[in-house]
Structure formats: structure tokens, C-alpha cells
Image 1: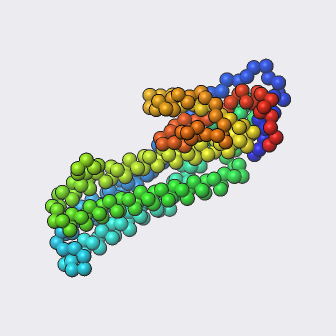
Image 2: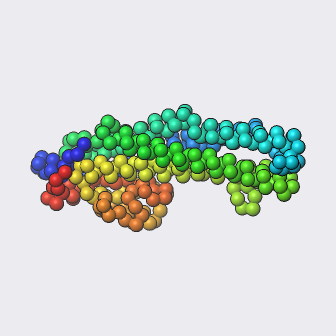
Image 3: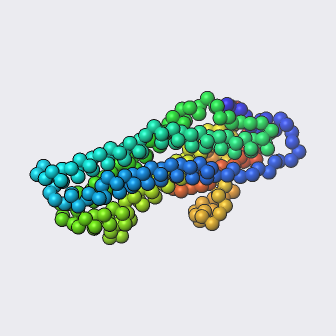
Amino acid sequence: MKINLPKIYQAQARKRKPKLKAPLYPSSSERSLNRLLRDAVNDAERLYKIMLKPYIGQAKVTYGYKADEEAKSFWSRLSEWQASVDGIFLSEAIRKKAVAIYKRLISQNTRAINLQSQAVAAIDIASDIDTYLPAYLNGQIKKHTALIKNVSQQIKDDITGIIRRGAMSGASTQSIIDEIEVGLQGRKGRFKVARTRAELIARTEVANFNSELTAKRFTDAALETYIRETAGDSRVRPSHRVLDGLVFRWDDPPPEGHPGQSFRCRCTASMNMDEISSSKGLKEV
């Protein structure tokens, strides 16, 4: 819903400006999404240990169209494992859980926004049933699906590539397994890499979606600016720490982007009382 929060605040003629608590980063949604994606990676690894690992030695026998029956059986098993990995990551069960997590994130954002608007003018400016939310949620789920499909594909490509290269070069079964599980020549094990990727997706997507919702809700309330707030802990990077407490416009982001838009950013946006209490904030909506 579109309202003019500065106009409402100034009409109330309050004697004192309220002190606003900085919105909290939605870390619980990030943890939930990270756990969901890590569980998917763990399931793919579990199937690798059941379906592929005991038979990797068979891939060495021969390779390609001239392969003997034992080798053909392995490559068929590999194809079945690849299909199973897609079945894990692209399952309807995972999609429904992701939708539930993003819906909870919307509710967290609604509460954070309304906590400030209530302090400012004793009104709610956000709702879990705002008319634009279904389109926002659908867009986010499409983006999320594309990202986890990429994780699935990367796992399949990595494991398949290692096995095929090993089979063609005559590498030992143990060296192939070690490259997959532990990593060789400075590279990490492939499933460990996938779990790191899952963690990055969870952080990035939760932060980006939270930022997108906040920008929409601020600007719908005639708020053109915000105060940048860091997470306030030891993990805040120096380049973001120096931005803490500074005012930015939604139509003119800093080089680092708005809160939550840059790599691993946990910053949030707080309402700018100077704008709300100033006659410059009285724009038409």
C-alpha cells in the first residue's frame, strides 16, 4: 500500500523524534535456507557413496563405445546417479520448503518495517498480503530454482569429469576417490565445494530478497532515503563498517550497493527520521 509516512508523522505534531531500533538481519531465514541446500548436497553425496564409490574401479576397464559389460554397467550407473541428483535438487519437496522459507522472510521483513513505522507514526505500512508480494515471491523462487539447478549441474559435472579423466588416464581407483572426496593439488573435495556454494546462495538470496522488499516498502511510504546499519559484530568488513550510520538514497546506491546487495552483506536499512520530520519529505505519493 502506498502512503506518505512523512506527512502522517508531521500531521501528528509529536514533540520528540522517536529513536528507532535498527532492523535485524533475517539470519534465521538464512540458516534455514542454508540447511535445506546443505541437506540436498549431503543427500547427493550419500547416493554417490552408495551408487558410485564401490564401483569406480570398473570405470577404468575400458571407456566409450568399446567398453566391456562391466564398464558399461558403471556408466549406466553413473547416469542413474546423475538423474537422482537432479531428483534431489529439483524435487517438489525442496521447492515447497524454499517457498515456506521465503514466505517467512517476508513476514520477518514486514515485522521489521512495521516496528519502525509504529515508532514513527503508530501505523503499519507493510503487510504479508500486500498485492505485489505474489509477483515478488514468484520471481524469487524462479531465481532460486535456477541457482540450485546450477549447483546440481556443477556436482554432476565435477564428479563425472573426475571419474572420466581418471578412467582415461589410468589413474588408480583410490586417487579418483581422493580427488572427489578430499581434493588434490590444492583443490577441495567436490562435495565440500558444493556445500560452500549452498551457503553462499543462502546468504546472497536472503539478503537480496530482504533488500528488495525493504526498498519497495520504503519508497511506497514516500521514503526516498535510508540510514545504513551494519550487523554490528566482528564479521563486518571494514569497507562496510565505514558506511554504518550514513544516509543514502534509494535511487542513488553507493558503490557497494544497497544493504544486502553485495557479496555476503548483512547490512540493513533503517528509516531516516531527518527526512521524515523535514518538509522535504512531504512529496506526493
